[in-house]
Length: 174
Image (cartoon, rainbow, N blue to C red; front, side, top):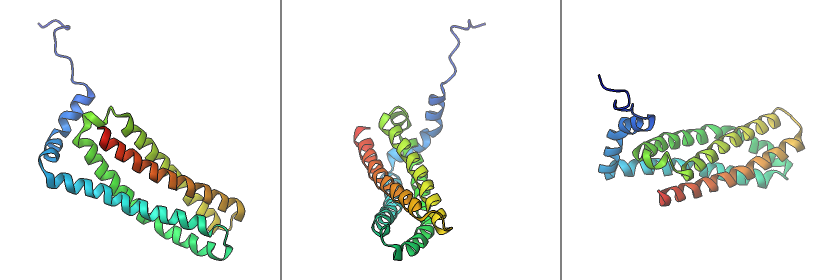
């Protein structure tokens, strides 16, 4: 019988996870085509979703003082959510693949976790945008609703660009 102190320690959760994703990590490292497609998918999804969101945020800020165009802008906002969420979903999926490709680096990176917190804040802000927009379309308090929409548009702009900065920092710091 092996004494308990000499028995091999069970693998840590991180070690187990690293072993689980090792085939993917190896494929990603060995194939420039795979790496290029995943990185392109991540950037393209962010460009698409973020570009649309930034354009809509800018328009929100521009039309907020023009009562004549507000209603039309609310319709455009409502029709854009699925596209932005679709882009974020693709970005999330490719982000998981990027994370798994170098798990040991990213799991301990404060830049990575800061970026994830920023993404969560962006999603929460997006929820705030949809709530303000829905209340306005339902005939809610016009001035208060537009003030809320303006605040969320500014927050969205700041978050999209801060997330982009965090992504560049992550690539260069890893």
